[in-house]
Length: 180
Image (tube, rainbow, N blue to C red; front, side, top):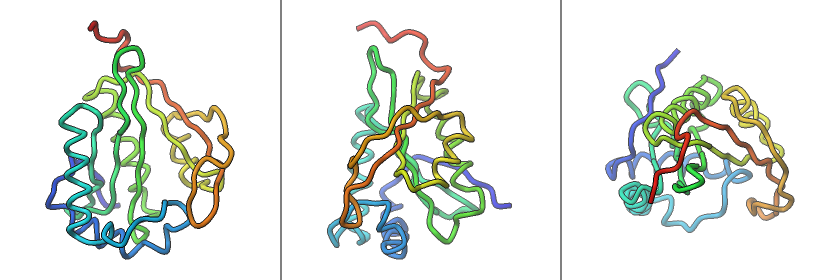
């Protein structure tokens, strides 16, 4: 079994992320939104990474990459971080299709939960999955997430609107919001 780790994303990850996205473009068309052609280029991904790092510097996100045996194989992010009375973030993740079925995605989600709790001191983590994405739902359940509803026609991808399941996990992070 290969080791799985997370680290903060870097601009130098742009080219490898572009290659992974380009290779899996059709395989993930049913799960991800349509994107312009430049998204799949090294320059386009480097620009995306720079935007993610800007959000990180403002405390709005923790953007990371999934690493196995020294190679980037996917991404994980805790985004839309809200402080004050919410203390929550939104979890997103993907792993290259060639690396699926090896436990990397599940381990990455577990590591992201630890970051949300221990480093970001969040009280709650949320995620969405398409209704048909049973593999992702199983991973979220395995890591203590529970579903709390379905949003109909919530996400447009692959030429159609899709229902999504909303997921939540309470963390042991912040017990009280910081004072203003």
